[in-house]
Length: 155
Image (cartoon, rainbow, N blue to C red; front, side, top):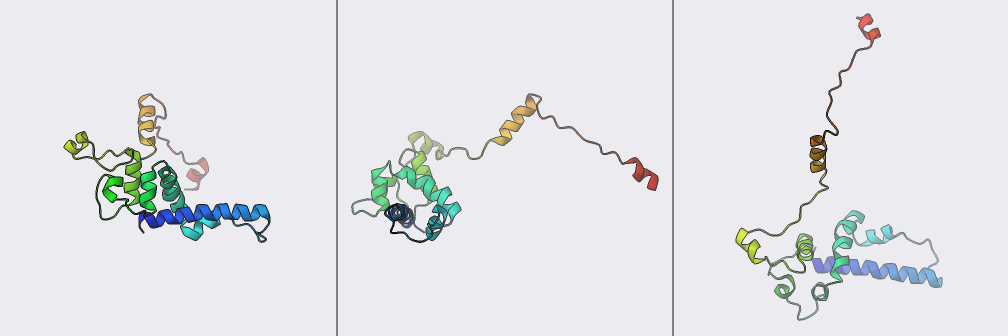
């Protein structure tokens, strides 16, 4: 699915939420009110919505040129918005674009290294454990299991 189509689904979800709130408020919604999760799942899975749609599209509002591109406005050119031309743009591209301040274009230093600025992922618990072991915390101890006296007698 393309980013513009995903963005249309995200915007439709927001409109549905607002419309539902209005209908409940003025009394025109007469049946059981659907949950936000039920509304989300009309458009996309709950987990994908939270991991991709909500995470990235909420930030896009700060970039009017990206909003115009996602909405398919005439005159919105890929290379002008993204900084590079690609056949297809993905959520990974959008994430990188947002993290790089609104461009996928590499900095001069990055081009020389042939690398893209990509932040480290993960929770960093591995490094935390290493530091704790260095400080003497959480030392591993080997436990020896002793057989019960009764099991020795049975043999």
